Length: 82
Image 1 (tube, rainbow, N blue to C red):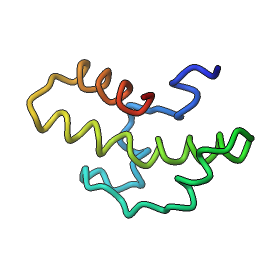
Image 2 (cartoon, rainbow, N blue to C red):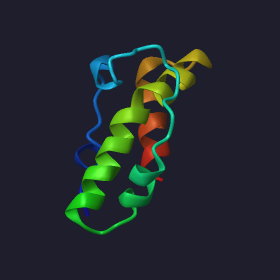
Image 3 (spheres, rainbow, N blue to C red):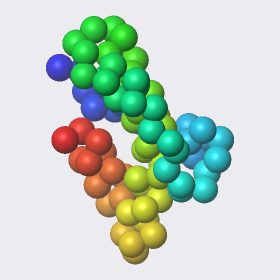
Image 4 (cartoon, rainbow, N blue to C red):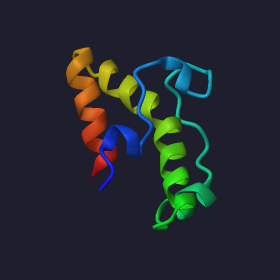
């Protein structure tokens, strides 16, 4: 099993968010979602891409609900790893 941080290419850096930084969810590319289910190198890359795209918007949503930064990071990680 690959540790979550490596599996999802997690970053606390806003620059990983498609350069937008506005916390708005991107349009889902279903080919990436489908590919993320494959147990292959391509599936791992697709999962990493999904996590890269969605990490910051999920984090921003949690922060907007009044959760402190560290707990929001933990909750975001929990959500993406489940």
